Structures are given as structure tokens and as C-alpha cells.
Image (cartoon, rainbow, N blue to C red):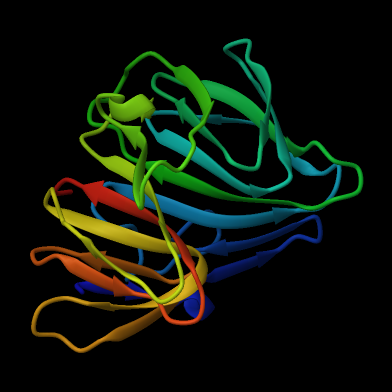
Length: 235
């Protein structure tokens, strides 16, 4: 393990209507030791109050992924898209030359919880694009967003891939680092992880870890694990 980001040390934001935990430096939270990992720039764990949200704002030259864990996102953008993104759906917005959008909690009574994920694109100045899909878990490691859309995944304009990992309690799974490095972010549950010749390390909800080289062995005990696995190029 080359990098570890404990959940309790993330940047914290409380705006009343928004509770957010920042794995990397973002907006008013700045820490030079945590500026991203490879081309992965942002992982924000956001909880949005009922009928509240992010008013129209703009992005440029960024691959923006929303991973909804509870509730429904109401999405409107300058490309003419107006969609609801429920829990279980994956949304990808390639900002490219520039796009404006808003994101609101579609419910008047229930909170919205989702991860906002940003990756730098491989090339600047591309045309903006929008994609959304519900991708069922077909195996322990299922591709969600890839550079070639393989196995029904959405497209990313970067030589990187995002997978959903689900692992039952009392089981193990070996993760291969296919590119220059990889990053694991725990969505729910807990596990122990190990690379060859290194001690076991506990990882739990909100934790993140970066790897290069040897495969990563994950072992669960009393709880199942849901996590996001990013296969990443050199920065």
C-alpha cells in the first residue's frame, strides 16, 4: 500500500443542507498531502437534505461520476439533459469544453447520499457528454466506467477504469493492479487487505488506499464489503 486516507481524517463540510466528506483537497478544504491520486482528483461523500441541492454551476475538462447510494438525484444541464438518477444508477458527465448543471435531492422527505468522483481527462477540449445506466453486479468485480465501454460499462475519456467490488462476509478476493496504480474506496462494510510481504491492514467505510505493483488480497470477516476500485494510469 502506497497511500492511505483514513475516513476520520477527511476534510469535513457542514452547510446545514449539505454534509460532505472530502477524501482529497476540494473547494475551501486544502491539504497539500492529499491533492488526489494519479488522475483521480475528487471523491466527495455528500449527504443532501430533502429538496435541497447544488444550484447551477459550471465545469470544464473533467470526468465527473456520480455514484448514488441512497435517494434520487435530480439532474439538469446545459446540454438539454434532465434526468433522475436513483440509487444504484451510475452517472457520467464529461465536462469537456464546458457544461453547466444543477443537482438536487428529488425527495421532499428523505436525504440523498452519493459519491461525487472527478478524474482528469486524457485530453482537454473535448465535446461535453452525458451518460447514465443501472449496471447490475455480475461478478465480484464489475466494470462501471471504462475507456472502451466494455461489458456494458459507461465510457470515460481517460485511460482508467472504475469497478464496483462486492465481497460477502467471510471470504477473500485478489485484486490485480492492471495499470500503473490503483485506488480502493470503501462504500460499506470492512475488510483486511494485504500485499505480498506486508502486514494486514484494516480498512472500513470511507477509507481509501492507493496501490502499485503486487496484487492486493482482500479478506472480509463478519461483514460484507462494497467498494470502488479504480485502475489508474501514471499521473
